[in-house]
Image (cartoon, one colour):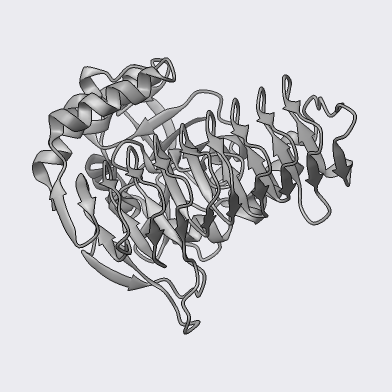
Length: 404
């Protein structure tokens, strides 16, 4: 059986994080959404249906993937937003041919036989129209970024117990490092932990991936995930339900937060109940609020609906899109949505919705000139031995041109 993961029209609900990535590449827990689907379905080769504008970017990054085409034969197509687990995945594995799983308006999976062809989500919908519909309530879908954030701790625990627990564990540490409940800790090869580090896995697992560096006197309390080649700075406090992707530099106080990768928050300052993209920089002593003084539910701007919607939660921090930069001593209000490529500084409170490519102080924003933005992005990526490709430049330029 061949499996194909697909993005549907609700990808827009996860903007700005899905401008430069498929929905399945959003991290929640240790893994990305598609990686967990691939694990549960035992998929060995990735095949993905995505928006056409992303296809060239993904062919650059993943030349071994099959993108927007299928070979002749039987396939099960699986929604990248599907919240699969060890129990409900059986519904997909046993899905009869020429049938589809639906949950309300969400297409969860389709099992059909088709000829070799190029395919997008619209074509998949057309093919699915002729299939027998099977209603399921046990496979819901992710709908918003804050859902990923709120369930992050449970997903870290799932990934640890089902994937990392049996992997080779390099848990040997230097003198002066304190491990609480070491059976709940997984350490990757090449990890460095300096004197004074405390890893507390008493209430949830801690996964520290390959070649990460945990500097002196840092405290990590599980469940948490620290990505490959990430550095946790001196005296950092990393609280539960936090996932930090690869090649980040993180200091200060962080809790209940997901950081995708290549992002720096090196200095003191609080970051909580937030979802942060790649190539973000957060300046020294910048803090965000994640709780209203009134303890009421927090509303967040949604790109798809172009208005703020109720998160049904009292704890929501901020969302910062890829390539955005926040200066020193900034304050970010509860539920703030900051778009892609913003450059913000100054003392006025950053709040509500900051559009893509905004430049300046909150309340007095201009549009970031695309040539200046690309110049900075080129410099930033070169510091990590990365280059910005012509495909990326075209996508970023098109987003800049469209605006909101």
